[in-house]
Amino acid sequence: MAHFQHFIDGTFTHGTSGRTFPKYRPSDGALIGHVHEGGRAEIDLAVQAARAAQKGPWARLTVDDRSDLMRAVADGIVRRFDDFVAAEMADTGQPRSMMEHAFIPRGAANFRIFADVVKNVATESFQTPTPDGRGALNYAIRKPKGVIGVICPWNAPLLLMTWKVAPALACGNSVIVKPSEETPGTATLLGEVMNDAGVPAGVYNVVHGFGPDSAGGYLTQHPGVDAITFTGETRTGTAIMQAAAHGLRDVSFELGGKNSAIVFADADLDVTLEALGRSVFLNCGQVCLGTERVLVERPLFEALVAGLKEKAEALRPGATLGPLISAEHREKVLSYYEKAVAEGASVVTGGGVPTMPEELSGGHWVQPTIWTGLADEASVWNEEIFGPCCHIRPFDSEEEAIAVANATDYGLSTAIFTRDLSRAHRVAAEVDVGITWVNSWFLRDLRTPFGGTGHSGIGREGGVHSLEFYTELRNICVKL
Ligand code: NAD
Image (cartoon, rainbow, N blue to C red; front, side):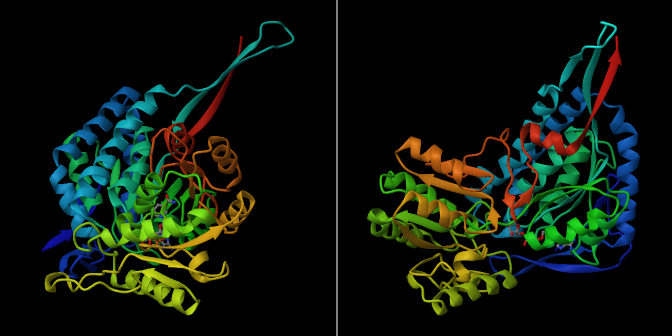
């Protein structure tokens, strides 16, 4: 039975709270371990360790040294690849192929990219004329912000955590990570990799626990934390922003979404279905960038519904489709399955719970599900469900598609499918989201700005944009 301990100042520890909580495997409901719950005391210790490291050995390293260490961490993840795959599979229940080909390699890639970015991004410089004719030179330098609180969700634990930890560390900060209570595994394992790579003690800390009145709440309230980066639900973001207001700490938020795909009648149907098959069902629909609203131009409506139904029905729960993360989340998703019918949807496929073999019957399985026929006011059309499901709605004009896609408080991502590239550019500029794909989905270049508008987030991370959040840019003016 696993014991997930905190990782504070380079050492694994039970902490002092004496409290643990159980961790169950989503695929069969089996108890796989106990997680130590951190409270105020553990957060205090982690903040002290992070501060000491940030002002001490970590601050003395050159950018090149830090960059080399980030590469060593990436190599360490690759060396322990099977352990990371196993830990994340146990935590999330998702298929091995997705772990092996996407989520774990991306965890390592995050360290590599920011090892490069931190060395190669220039700062600005201005020559300023002065009355005496000799002028002045302005130039900017970047300094780490200090101690960063990193609060993570459960849907792609290593990938989403390292997306924040890698740039934070590459910039010379130290971090305290509060992983999701649902997925303690890979954040803990990364502590071993950090030690093996030679990252100084206190630079990377992990405290397990929940949100309010637990590790998450105490971390965001702690005055020793200089900035908070958070990925998770929009309403949690609101609570964290309130906590961060004390002491005027900076925040970077990657929040929920209710993303639309817009499919025009001239789209390549195979390309569209391949992308939609992933954007609706990947990770059992538990992807913030995933599509829950499909808008399709009327002439293609029937073909698209039939094609996506085929994709859904080809998925095999327990093999190519994983479970939902928890019993509680399954209840939420199934409540939307019921609401959809109550709100007048036609169920194209799914809508319930699959029959699973005996050994998986305790898991949190749901059927991939497609609806048509809902009104635009339906809750299923407007609220983030975070399950393997979508509603498909016809449209008759570009203007209508844009207006419907924009009729939401969220603004994370959209995917546009058309062979008419001028239209693609036009529509892309009009849909109010942070990330748009044309004829694809989830094609990520880690140098590009990532984040949402409206209720989907605050700030951008990725490439140089991560440096904007994880460093303070200081201007130095030299009179010549
Ligand atoms: P969540 O908001 O419930 O929890 C996220 C983390 O916040 C957990 O570690 C939790 O313990 C902690 N937390 C909860 N309340 C807190 C509080 N008051 N103070 C401090 N910490 C607190 O989110 P989740 O259910 O883990 O993740 C799913 C959500 O994340 C979805 O809404 C999804 O869209 C979103 N998400 C967004 C992105 C993105 O990049 N925009 C990526 C992945 C997931």
